[in-house]
Image 1 (cartoon, helix red, strand yellow):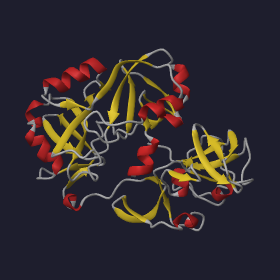
Image 2 (cartoon, rainbow, N blue to C red):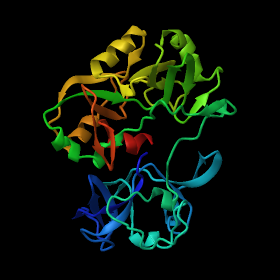
Image 3 (spheres, helix red, strand yellow):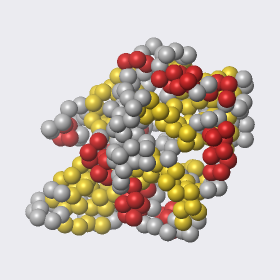
Image 4 (tube, rainbow, N blue to C red):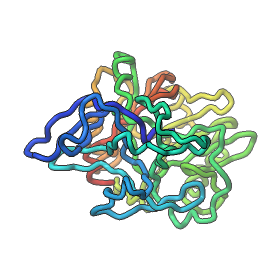
Length: 353
């Protein structure tokens, strides 16, 4: 699970040009605009990453000035909260929120009845649960009302690549290794699986009943039930008309596959096997930008690469995904995970979200 609220150390402070009351500070490879003299270098703070869904409590209410609360379903209950987004303040990109450690005083973990003002608050600690912070998910379309069959299947991993700003240390660790680069498409994710001779269709968090919704519509169009091999799952992005505002301005609705998961052997297919598997099913992968990419880059240079137009339309792309040609696992942002990370276009975040 993505760590949205963590304790982090301020690593650097810089002035903001032509601004007297604000400055910027660096957390990992994120830059955040703050009031001058509010914090100092090497101070531990609580950092909230963009896409955090914050509760409407006194410490966060100031964020509602000039914006409206959002609604999201959390554990089957509709909640109202605040979504953190990328902003430009006096020309400076600001990504996230910093708060003093004092906001943790008196908080309780759901499985811990003790008061926690001194609960080992070390750098890197995830305090998302403690503060009631979730990852923001867009509202489900009305067409999905009553279409849920059950929870997401436990034998297929969910996908949510880490942003490069959170794992820049991987660039030095895997320097010189061969990766492939694919386009990240802004649509709605779908998972198809065949396990124990049962075929399933899922959106990001739920398995769906067999209906006419777009996920099943495309499954039928491409005959995925019959083409998908037993013991495998494919995951992809649906993009086009009626999906997330169709930022790529595509005609119709399209399916682009980005993962093949071997359920029996509990692993993703390596790049070449992934490409062959998808082609054999008569499906398209997400656009492959480079399949012989030597990792010799900085965080800033990868973010610069993420800018540009999509390979499937003349409109701006959301970003890029980087994965090794041969699947690996590594220690990423506090946990052993698949070696895979994303660079999201900052101009896309500003203009389209």
